[in-house]
Length: 390
Image 1 (tube, rainbow, N blue to C red):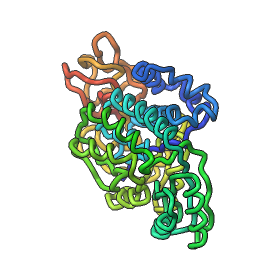
Image 2: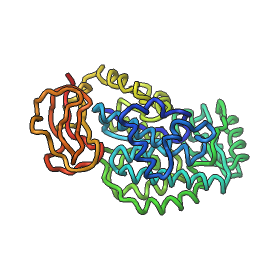
Image 3: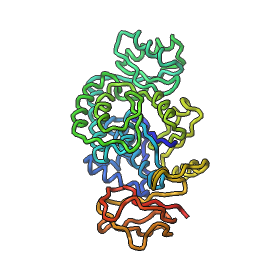
Image 4: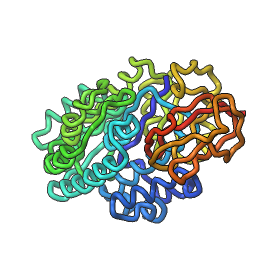
């Protein structure tokens, strides 16, 4: 089983969007900039490390890079049976699973970044990684400190992040080393995320969350708060409201994904932090990163090394040699009269029209089926047809 995982704040890097500028998925940047009311392209191309460290910048930039990567992966026909994201990455997971539409996701991530930065400025805090100590003993180290310090992330075996008031975090690190930790390492972050210090951000973000219409997930999502499987639209409001002040149970989430049958983890977005955590937690898993367009060929090659199951129905769980053609815009789809199942096409062939916009295939191959009916109203990037490459 293939699952997609999405990184959170801290994975960003200057110039991380440069390799995507000439890829069709870069079109998401202008759409997102219009929704957010700011030039996100400049953030992905020109912002320096200091600018990207700002929470209001790092979160929207990381989310958008994951969406570009997800769009590109979808274009080459790779689909996921489930999703999970680390902290901010949970919003990417919800967008990938169809729970949030793109516009709502951009608005929520923008508000989340602004709210968390304001909360951090109001109630200064920090974070540190405790290495080489089990979860229970890290909890004990925090409990033995009189100041405000809590576990913020259960990342992987022997890798737990604590957060809170700076002095208390330092003191908890000392106690952790007395209990057997190999190291306590300060993190260059702007706040004590996933702790009660984020309560003002939670209260502010709740107002935005309450305005969103959530949908049932197309595929399951394992969530940070409880490391459990969720699909129903009614679950998301409470889970996202709780997320900012609750620890990220990532190690537990990886085990939950494994119990669902996940064996291949594809990290979509900047960096390879989650790939490393999966290697540490599930050493027998297969792990692939998609950071740049050049990674797409490696992804397809890796997936082709083992047999893929036959599609349960048209367009689901595609073979590595199969590709999806997606809609370039929203509107009513009308297929070309000359196109049908079994038709062999060349790259650039017109499969139909959406209004006055041509639906062109990026690939050569044989049409296996249409996923949109004549006269059906489709959304941008919705799958239209699938074909087997020649």
